[in-house]
Image (cartoon, rainbow, N blue to C red; front, side, top):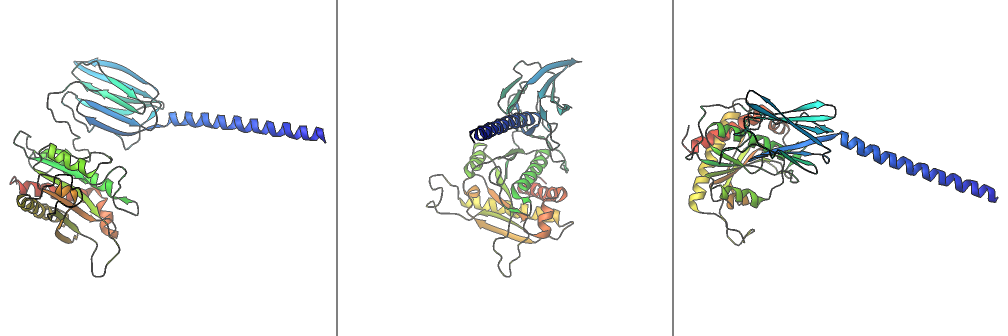
Length: 368
């Protein structure tokens, strides 16, 4: 009996050892797999820094330069990095860079190339999952923006941006953790960002100084959005959203475009510790901007679609109260409507809406 018990104990210990070894091998293989599939999640360009955010910590970057006919190619090979089809950097523009290139050089390396005629030495840094490329210094005050990243048709005569150009803030509603409304896989934050990028590209083409509250999937507070507008001394502020039907009411149509401007509010309300701007001048100018942009949007999309005009409405949204500049909030359509929701995800329809916004801005400033 004792011999049987000892044999059983030895067998159970052997099984425990086998399980422990299996778990260690599984952990090692999962870590190895993770490194081999270190996907690039996002990129951003700000002033003289181009940043790359990966899924996992970066293993190693091999850096070297190639020179040919006065052009220097700064080459960065990121080990065990994977490039998804959705990520690219050729859309970026910088005053000291001729071109940005990126591709899957091999199964184990992602290659980034920055072409410039300028020599610089502080080339890159790694902080966990983030790779930062330090670009050659550009001209002081040079504007840096993503040019036509959404393949947006740029209509009308191109104008140069100068110190007299109006400043426009484009606010892509929601973002990051705040996804906004959603319906059957359609997510508001993605649509608003695409429309905002298109409107930005068109406005820059027409000679406006344009700042975006966000140009990627980023979480922002309402105060951050209005603070940017006030800091940049914007001439107008345009916030882009999509609508969703609440609990349905009888005799109410949940589709169409509507635009909001400031109703005017008591200071004894939410955010009472923050300064609000509710002058009659601002309300009148905001109403004019509402009217012109709504007209421009409907005119463009009605060329191919039946779209309901839900009118101009008043509200006390913080983005309308917290800005010094005339400000409006656009509800570009209902994602909960079977047909309108589908249209809002289509590139051509988004182009039409963005074109309408820009036509309205042009009319507001008398630049048609």
